[in-house]
Image 1: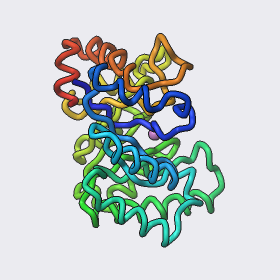
Image 2: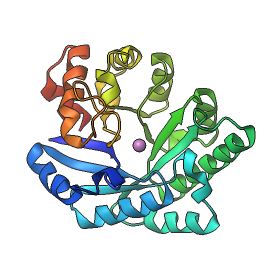
Image 3: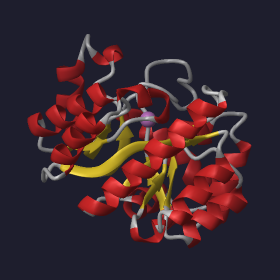
Length: 247
Ligand code: NI
């Protein structure tokens, strides 16, 4: 059985068949799904999905590109949702300097990242970290927040094997999805090769990041076996071992 740690089934791309698809997941060997909020509305929708399906759990948080959603009021609502038993993580939170280049916007991202890390610590939940083109600042903030006390995953990991090993040393997990199957996914394959299997979590980031040979199509958790196949090949182990250890 597969543990899917990162999907966005609240995305509008699933409006046409959401109920059919989610109902089918257990038959497709998907045991557990964490639906991750990327905006404040996404956090609320993740929470609603988690309360509708026994095998779906919620992560509540606001993505760095959506920090305009955050205020003292919405932070308070995140806190309330975070205390619910079907909420298992704060996320996705972090820094994205790829989409936002202005210094003041990046400073605001860092501020809300710190605030949401503090919330995770307060409610004793792990974090799901999104970090793009911001390796040094992400690592620095996670160290200063005493991130060793706030466990979690670096989702859709895109940096070097060296930085991955540093995160693993800090106690973090590395989220691996469709990118590992891409022809230009060599760096992630090297990371997978160099970190222990029990520090890897399987994820899709659905509807995005569909593995080869379906790259470009809408992604969902039923494509995770292609990710498992690639990890098994890279680490020269069986697919069962990948599925069981990451679970
Ligand atoms: Ni995501």
